[in-house]
Length: 415
Image (cartoon, rainbow, N blue to C red; front, side):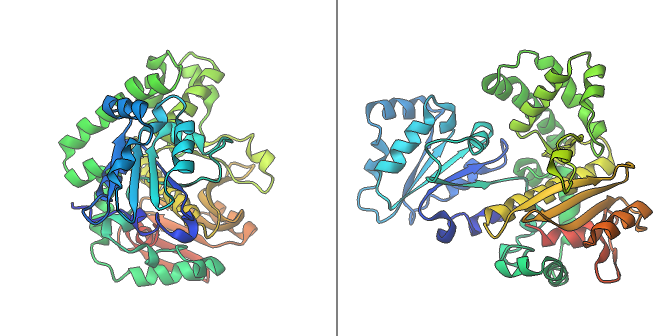
């Protein structure tokens, strides 16, 4: 498989949103951030890439904090790329000094993973000086090269009537060939560029082990004060079989013979490292939601235990990615949840737009029949419902706002 380009290229420099501020680009390790930002430097686009893991860069900065501007010279525009700067002491002060001092014609893009994402959630003097974007696992539409303008909720008009616009997008995307093969390839090799492009089972098997080892033996030690790496490794080993169910930290701590706070903290750290992400149960009363168990998924669905869990995990990640893109585009706020009634009935996913429920999504491998509990919950909230099936070739519509369709028909409509 050949990956043509990344969809973020189509909106990351939108001046209506960025307003000449710094760009913060965060995402998991090995997701393609460095490859993408380096591709921005061309003979027609002057600039410099500085990796702060490089001792030479740090020495030059110590001698002259603006040494990189020597390369700007007479260029009308200049791109400054700062990679891994969040690992340096007082990195926020460094960025503030650069942003407040350099020529406004100089564009600045900062890339990073765990700490850069966390920084966005804390108050700091850099607030108002940057715009934050995500680079997440590759989607079906991205692997197919579908322009972002043709995808659901990627323009202001779609937000006026989300369900009607979704139907229009799905129908128009039916003309794209290769939908089934694109979905199957992603399902098999995951959404990270290297194993996806390689398309080799042997390479994937080694990459999976090495990636987990890298996060746990290097990033976890550097970015946290966790000493019990073996316990974290055991958590990573037990989670694949728990995908798709509300995660009981009490049961997990009992299985690992550890304490509830310890296991809860370890899972939180794995989320900060972009190995995991969690969904909260949706409720009209948020304080009730916070007391309920979350569902935990892998950022790369290939780690889930079996076909059904891999499929649900894949849909969860691609829906989470879509919500991140929609929010990054600044047309509105999109969030992903799951729904669970007091009697234990569930629907896998709920998308809310500007805090209002907009779409239910249930996943099945091949079952096209909609369960009674899904119908009951859908009736209670009176919002559209889609059952996404792994089995190819399915497209069934029931009434105005119920749809059963195959993943290869649904996913190409999402960014």
